[in-house]
Length: 120
Image (cartoon, rainbow, N blue to C red; front, side):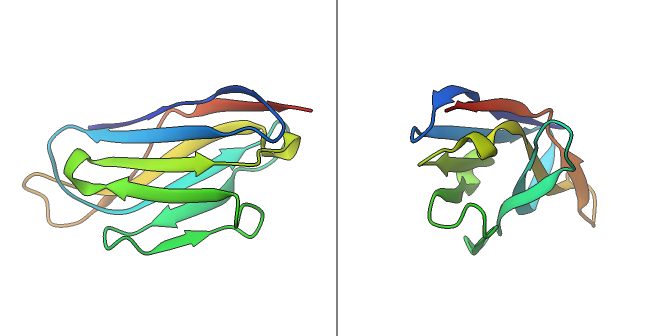
């Protein structure tokens, strides 16, 4: 079972990127899925969350610029990032509550992270 994040890269300020996070393995169902990010020398911080119902929450710092979504049929979560600024630079991690086949309760998993660099 693993979470894999894709889509990071180098972009100029004002540009856009779309991150993806795919959950794979013997998964029965997926609960909340989240994005976090960690800038150099700083603590990891919450970016956005999407429930399996589609309900979303975004951190104040990204509201109006980023949009989280998911495709339950593909076990995939997305983060559309627009109007990127240098302070958005960091490693973006996906996180999800996964219920594995044969299990009753969800367990929390982290992906490996994808680097986003925004140049000024």
